[in-house]
Length: 248
Image (cartoon, rainbow, N blue to C red; front, side, top):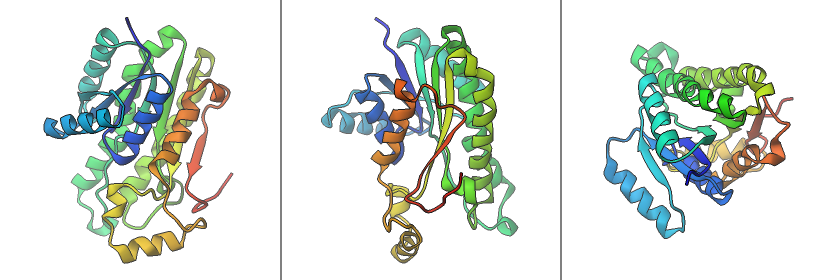
């Protein structure tokens, strides 16, 4: 029996895990992708999620490879079920001031954070178009909206992600497919908690709510966008940042 599938790239990360859990609560069979060659880590993650009451599938896929994404999508469609929700959450940082930035650090961030969105979405879209239904949700960033010191590569990729969202939303609006982005602010993930405490407290002091976001608060927004409650929302960017950056 085939199940409706939610495919979450970067699903093993702090925000990705909560997104997987939320979509599972919504009744989807969740497939998380990882580029981590360390499959032991994936096994450990699956076990941890089982203990918490969640059954997830993990597939290895390099989002920077168009052919790998195509093969992954074919595998999931053939063996697991129709992909109704795609969440592009895979992302990396390689921070440094532009004057010091190596070309390889620019390329790595753009190819994972932006090319990865094209590679996965293009592969899934053919199937969504046939079925005339789909939810595509791109995890962008507050720094794609306002820029950030030392993050020309990351900010450019995350801003580009929303440009992609707005354009594709218009192309597929009549096909029953919505395309939206979510822009988290600073969220209490392992990555953010590794930042030096003084710097972290300085960041928090700039947030009107005076706290970091919780991964589940990002996941709640994704869950909403994936649901029928959000069927008239497309081409939108939903900021979830505690008031750190506001615009309309």
